[in-house]
Amino acid sequence: MEEVNVARTVEMLAEVLSSCSPDDRIALISVIKEVLNDQLVRTQIDECEMKCSRCGGVEFSRYGKTAAGSQRWQCKHCQAVRCFNATGMILANTKLTNDQWMTYAECFVDHLPSSRVCERVGVCPKTAWFMRIRALEALYNYLPAFQMRSGMGVEVDEIYFRESFKGTRFEGLENKPREARHDRIGSKQGISDDQICVVTAFDDADDFFFEVTCRGALTHDVALDTLKGRICSGAIVNTDLHRAYGRVMREIGVAVHNAVSAKDEGSIPRMNKIHQDIRTFMAPFKGVSTRWLHLYLSWYKWIRTFSSNSMAAVKQIAAGDYIHTWQSIKDMPYPFRDGRMNPTKC
Image 1 (cartoon, one colour):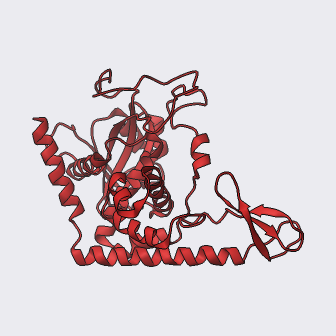
Image 2 (cartoon, rainbow, N blue to C red):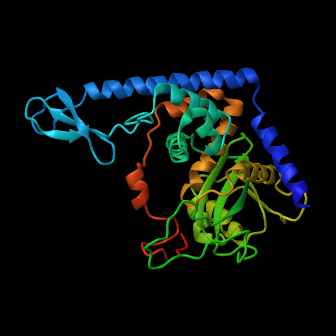
């Protein structure tokens, strides 16, 4: 039975990745390369627009690099040394060549895992993964907002992912969350506090949204905070029989709320299809850290957007800023955990 499921997953993945024609793929790669070239030029221009905070001078000379690898600059007028890392563009402060980023553009479109990116781009696994995170952060910040109109139909449901600490080091932690699992040994069955709830919705305009909301089962307060402002009064909403939805829909004031059993075939077919596609999309990565789950979901939404409007989707990268550096990743808090790694609900 497992072999059948794996074969089906591979078949579905091939279908998702082949949704665009060869001509569309070539066009998309071409646009992404133009975007990356624009960002490289903008990064070089930003160096010419730097201003000294002490004397206001605009002439600088390079003055070595910091321990983290950031370029340092010395003002030619007052000799003050500064680091200018605030541009945040994808190609800012990169040590990779322009050709390597051009090659990576093709890998990104092809939805390749880091091991394949290493082979194509000629970088180590750590760098390949970090290139992906930078691109995904840019996409996440500029994805179009989910918009509902009165009288429009929408399906709402949750999808759960097991909490993952992939890539996290526990050495030196006083309060280790749990021991590493192998082949799901020791995993709790059903919906438990070991799972992360993602609320998703799909409307008649073929628009889709997701929100990584909480640990464990969805509650009324979390559902209200997530859906209020996204689903307007007058909407026609289909959900499963989860008790949180009935009260939330009454408070929002939707026109019609159809609550049907998830066991009924065809109850919320579009949402079920999207959840199936999401799991297929995630399968090649063999586990995604909870820390980056929202970015990988944005990647899935980006692919959906590209299938209907390639130019609009790619342009979202053009103004994209990345957020995290290697140093900030080490210090960033873990989702749904406090500073001592104790679990929290939201």
